[in-house]
Structures are given as structure tokens and as C-alpha cells.
Length: 195
Image 1 (cartoon, rainbow, N blue to C red):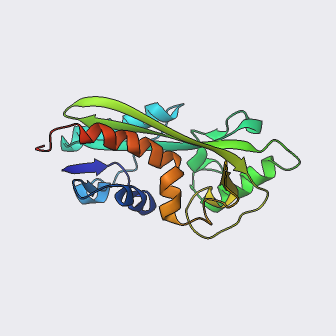
Image 2 (image 1 turned 90 degrees about the vertical axis):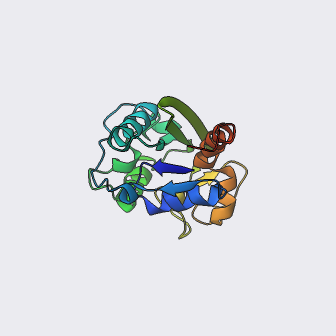
């Protein structure tokens, strides 16, 4: 079954592909010749995900899913949240985002945070939402070279290493995206295969 994942982020595509069995063939935006930078102007993760899925579905008429993920820090009233990718500005630079985050948390002892992912699926012209989240904390300086985004400064609850230090296979068992994907896959497993 072919599904479009509404992203060109190769890290995300790899993470998702590692979670799937061979029933599914994941196509990225480049595979369906969509090169547009799809706007993410909504004020919450769900609306951003739905907009991206609709955008791609309208242009391809194919089954599609899109996600939006945010890092929500308690001491920052949920920021960066929906603005996580562009926290330090429109350049979408992960290093700058981490620098800004750590600067804003200087001197703050409550460093509780969560990653949250919302996936919007358009399947047979109907829309569905799936959510996953992982609780944890922000450490004071980055550790690890794996992962992407805020992974080098986020430690999940019950762990002593950052998302950037643990193997991808381990991250895929506990991550917010993995949880949302598991719900998506459980839904898809109940659907007829001939699409």
C-alpha cells in the first residue's frame, strides 16, 4: 500500500520507515513531485498537520499523512510548542533553536518538558488524527550526535541519556512520533489492503 508522508525531512522518513512493515511503501513529497514549502501557520499542532495532509491530498488524490511535532517546556508555558522548528527564526536552524532554548532556561530548575506529535491521516477521503507524547526534561548542555532537532538536550522520563545518545531503534520504541505512528498503524492494519 502506498502512503505519502507529507515531508521532505529524510530523518523523519527514515524513522517512520523503520517502524513500518513491508505492507506499506512510504513516499516522500519529492517522490510525488511536490517541492513547495507547505505553510505551517496554525496555532496548534493538529491544525498544522491537517493543513499539510489536505494540501498534499488535493494535489495527488492519494492517501496521505502529515505530522507536526512540538517540544513543550513547562517553565516556558508550553513554548516553543507549535513554533519548535522556527523557534530561533525563519531559518529553521536546529542549533540556533537549541541555543535559544538553553538561554531561556538559564537559572530555571523546573526543566520538565514533553515532545508531542500529532499525525493527520487522509485515507479514502476521510480524515483521522493520532497523537503521541513523551515526558522528560531539558538538560543544561547538549549530549550525543544522533537524532535531530532538540534530541541532544532532551532526556525522556526513566532514561539517563538524551534522544541523541540512544540508538534509533531504542528511540523508536518510546518516542512521541513512534506512539502516534503506532496508533496510525493500528488503524491502517484494520483497513482493506487493496487501495
